[in-house]
Image (cartoon, rainbow, N blue to C red; front, top):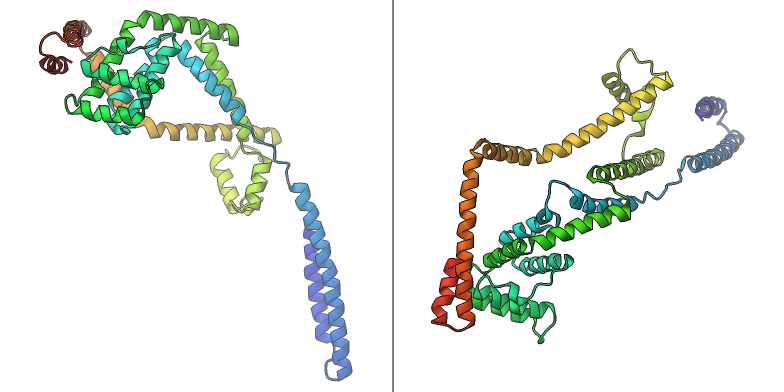
Amino acid sequence: MNNFLDFINNDVNVRKEMLASLPTKTKSNIKKYNETVDEFIDKYESYKDGVFKYISAKEISLDPKVENKNKEQFDDQIKELEKYRLLLNPINNYYEKLGFDELIYRLSNYYVFNFDSVDLIINEFIDRFKEAGIILTVKDFDYTYYVNTYMSLFLDVRNNINNKTKEDLDNLFEEIYWSNPDLISHIELNFRKLIKKYSKKLDSYISKKKKDISKEYNIRSYSDCLLRINDLYEMKNKLIAEDFSDIVNKAINKEFDVSQLLEGNKFRKSAFDSLIPESINLNDELSMDKIYASLEKLNDNLREYEEFDKIQPLVDDFKNTYYKLIGSNSRENQVVIKGIENEIKKNEKELEKINFKINRNFGDTKLLKMESVRKS
């Protein structure tokens, strides 16, 4: 194509000289001049058609067959293995494995999200217990009289009993709120109590689940699961990595300047000079393959650092807080924690007695309800 371009440039100059030498004084001269111009036009129209056919053929030859990069096949497998990874993690107990830590956080910080999320979170709590074979009933929600009242209607709405609706539940919440504005906090405490109450069943469920996963998916250990996840990520990254078809399509869509890839381009030369040692022979294919592989790793490392840089403040804050905790007297902390646990048990026993009296209409129920709120 470059030779053809040189030919055209030379041919144009020759024909310009030919036209300049033709006489144009008489009508006959002008007629001859116009006929010559028409011949040139016909000739260059044929050149144009030939060039168009050549470029069209070249475009077809360069147009890559874009493969469907179905990364979803890896995403689904990774998502599934991530669930198993959480279950197989030897550090976490059933509390984290069943996601109770996240649900507790969301319920205690519901105001950060929105009020409508509260019912969704409560449903998720109930579903997690159900997953472990524990069907919660209204009897389980006995932390206070108001918790019991609200959850009784909540379960009716959830299970479509007595034609109760979400509107009925919202109305009940507004009614209770004036007497007990800490209702949601007390529901959270009730779930904490249930998690502790059913701890053996929950732990047993997780143990069985781990055995089933290991058997069904042939995952021998937590580290084995991590290796499989890592392998899937590597296959996914290779699939979605930029290839020839991506580069051509970006060039066609003018997403970058193609001239930067051409030999002799200043930008290309500057990039090579800054990244490749002078001792490397740029014409040595083996050496250049190693250089390109190293540059790909450098690119991956830079992207990884970019992601880490986004969360570094959070990591630093966690480390500082953690170091302060482990630097204190652990024995003394255990004594304090034990004292708090005993105080909680004492208050919960007193709450149970108060709630028993309320349910049996023993004494002044109005005062007892106020006392139950105060104790909780």
